[in-house]
Length: 357
Ligand code: SF4
Image 1 (cartoon, rainbow, N blue to C red):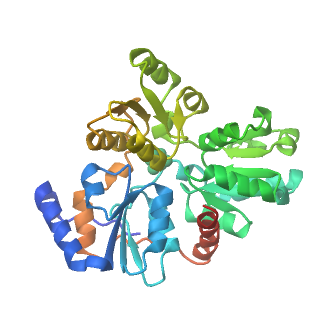
Image 2 (cartoon, rainbow, N blue to C red):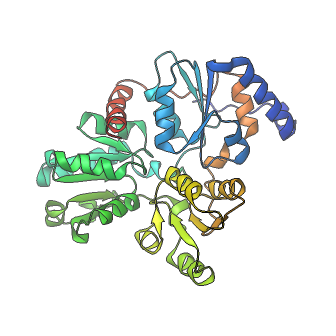
Image 3 (cartoon, helix red, strand yellow):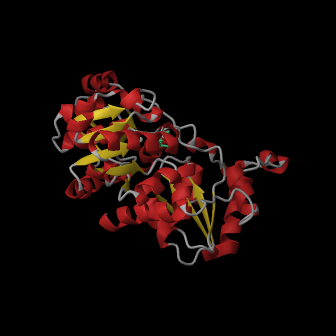
């Protein structure tokens, strides 16, 4: 896509003026426009969104939009792609900043996954495996799962999706987040030596034929920098300083951090956990800082703070300026498209996920 330069007028406007203009366009377009905002977005963006949520909630919200002609997605690229895949043909999905990608999603490219699949097939037949892609992945990977009887999952429903897949086949191939896959495998009590990692840089993913034949789950070697930033030392330091605190982390954290925490779950789970906590509780959260700061502000009756400060720079790329610029050019710029047949195949895998959760 051609890179567009933001007109100067947006840079010169105050935040207040930008917010007023955005609200005026929202009022004018009314039900023709829906703004979706991920929990990791800046506070001012989340406040302007019609729906806020995690990847699963926003996928559902996107699929439910029957009246909206325009869906403006304040999140990262793979989320807007999922909204586009689930939208009706006449709907237009726009992402205010195309450079808002997800480095984890970029860690598994389609040619690498297809090459791994062929290698696995030679060793113990790919028919024994269900491919599962985390929603944090390109449309091509979702399409790969769609055409190979696989499925998409989010961090909210990964456990249920793994159960669904294990009913179909004895083995799973999960990409691109090693840590989410490992944390789910641990919860299901799968033996450690039955879970192996596929490193796309290595021959046979860095495994022997025997390891591949005996594996129950093959995990792609990918990770989220925001969540692997949290270390066991952070948890131990909080335990010592605030022994009464409840520590809750996202399952993209490494297994040692999840093992030391009191609970783990998706951003939607974290939001509900905080809402349900008693006034006076101390809750320490290991996830993206914008969500933690907002929860602290929204729950002044509870003491809420971060396990360590970790910001997703890609989510942060969406701001009032590029949002207003997009709304001023509704249906015209920053349009997310997914070509056929990728769109139809990816839709199969996404709809399978929505059906079972
Ligand atoms: S928080 Fe991690 S997984 Fe989520 S968009 Fe940012 S880099 Fe990707």
